[in-house]
Image 1 (cartoon, rainbow, N blue to C red):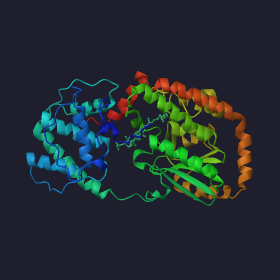
Image 2 (tube, rainbow, N blue to C red; image 1 turned 45 degrees about the vertical axis):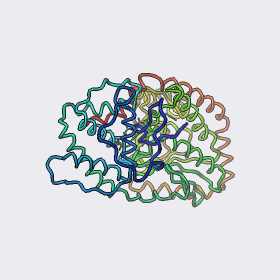
Image 3 (cartoon, rainbow, N blue to C red; image 1 turned 90 degrees about the horizontal axis):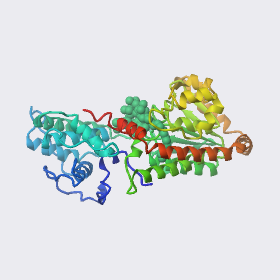
Length: 430
Ligand SMILES: CCCCCC/C=C/C(=O)SCCNC(=O)CCNC(=O)[C@H](O)C(C)(C)COP(=O)(O)OP(=O)(O)OC[C@H]1O[C@@H](n2cnc3c(N)ncnc32)[C@H](O)[C@@H]1OP(=O)(O)O
């Protein structure tokens, strides 16, 4: 499945057209885009325009221009300068900001939104339409000024926030979305998209599978999965639903089910002790997978939430089988069907979590314990895991296959589409 950066929401090309060239194929000195852009052949918001706008916004490095920030009203020149300034941003400002920029640009140049509302499946254009429409009758001059102000604030904040977070520079492992280290007999796989609450994008699914396969063969005795930042993981990255391949949503759902089945299969088959260090809240698939771990240690700040019904979806990660066994069918139903969020203490009482630690001493206590575990004879641990787990493996693979097939259908439902659109457009209302 093609990998979609988070900002694909805005920059994905229209299905029937050739994709816009990636930023690194563009001329570094390409001229600024004209202010007046042609309307798209789709007759709605102008998909070519949107695509061009956003990719240009991110990709054109041009000379630094200074904004006249003392002016009360932005002139046309200020506006043009701001458009150029946007292209100097070294860091992707995120979908929310790009939607704001898009909406303000449209309002400043064309006035209030006068396009028909895109259909519910047209996720990208619907998000753009929502953002523009939310500006109501904001005067063109005010939109222009707001655009200039927003770019000005972005220029300073993104420059200063370009520092690498501690530990995130360990690219030597070759992973983009993970930090993987191996020491003291422990391979640690750390989910590393802290600004997205460690949501699992397509790249991360692939990288986790790769890291697990490597860990199963390396010298370490145990393997640990944890999260960087305040979240363990917010589950599936909901922008995974946005880049629709030429085969349409059906192909997207089919590919997703194939990927999910392979991904969960790696956890079912993992041969060494696999331990989750749940450093903060966990959502969706990051919770359901816990039933396939050999031990789960949680900070008392962690929560466990599987809002599948809210999302029009159904359980995965073999949780439809493991959770009723671990915690009783009724308790599993509260979580998996009604979306009840558990505290770490509750999850421990239900048997999903092995032990809870105060957040203030969590890392120290857990890692001391894990280092002691990792000194145990590795073959004995591996064989003991095998005898505990092996008679369930076949059943787990069958459950996994069934869950993926059910989910494939769910992803095509209105309930699911609406929930995803609601999440993606929640912040685009200005
Ligand atoms: C191959 C496909 C396999 C599919 C497997 C099936 C899996 C199913 C699931 O996992 S279902 C669960 C899906 N997850 C969610 O529904 C959680 C959605 N996120 C949230 O509800 C909230 O973001 C939050 C409660 C996790 C955190 O809220 P808050 O503290 O207010 O932070 P923000 O919302 O501002 O988040 C910061 C930043 O992160 C982005 N983000 C967070 N989670 C996700 C996500 N799951 N998908 C995409 N993006 C996410 C959020 O948009 C913000 O981004 P921004 O700064 O706006 O660019």
